Length: 380
Ligand SMILES: Cc1ncc(COP(=O)(O)O)c(C=O)c1O
Image 1 (cartoon, protein in one colour):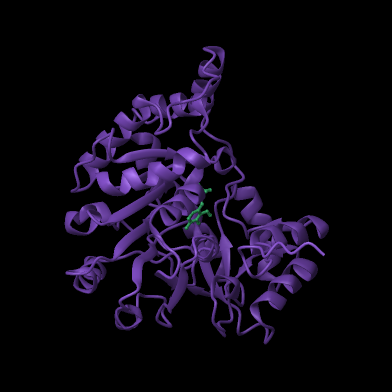
Image 2 (cartoon, helix red, strand yellow):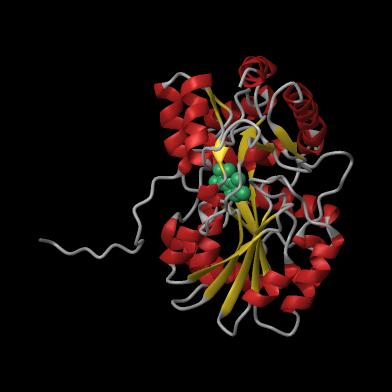
């Protein structure tokens, strides 16, 4: 028998694929996976058509087209406190997932430890394992805020990187200034690198401001920051994103990127570069999603689910302990089969037994979709 010794020890199907499959079997409404069911802006689609007609069909430069990197450099230099050079600090990627994967492959060596904050987005762990690194999970506090004492305790002389998500998926929590101060204290005078996954940077509620790693130059000089056009422009299927990093980390990143993806979709890069010229295309996103969040929360008050406040992202956690004793995976299956609505359980985001009776709903849906789902959830 052929021995292949695969790199990933456990053959795991992502919870998103499992739930999507169950959803289609039971014809349920999918408030599980994080994607919008409304259309991309016609203006952006128009730009895409334009560049297809212009025959922008061949390989883009490895690091991404100049026009797109220029407009991103302008956007980030004016929004945050780190000056961004389009040539040495930005690389366009095939979505944030590839950006995160490549960041990790470019610096994590066998035996290195990477601290991740759980519940954690599910691509982090396998990406670290593939690099030969060791995942060191640190749980959020019971109220889903950062437990900085636990992060400090998890640091060892093998810690290569701390990876975090802000705004956080699945909890919707956002970082405060104090969180960045706590992080600074931990990494000062160490060689620890940072990876800040900020794909929901433009979705922050109640007038709050997203604080980026790029607001803290003494931290961003040791960190990668990853972004997703898919999340910002309702186009998750386009798989377009980018990474911002200082010169030395960008060089390490591109050294891997060029042998992996090499370069990403060219006509979409031109279209995005045009579209980004108008900041309204992303600056109004929080207001747009807050209307949906408020509607969802208001109607869920008529249900037996208990809301856990969300400050960012298009997710909302709900406690179902007043409804059922089932664990979160069983409860999610039951919700799909009996009530025709899908949520995402929290336990697949954790390597340790989480014991939370909590599921995540995605409210990035048309009002019609939410309205049907809410009527069903009110009957649970
Ligand atoms: C926290 C987080 N990071 C990264 C991604 C992946 O982004 P992309 O679709 O651009 O690969 C997601 C998608 O759900 C996410 O929630």
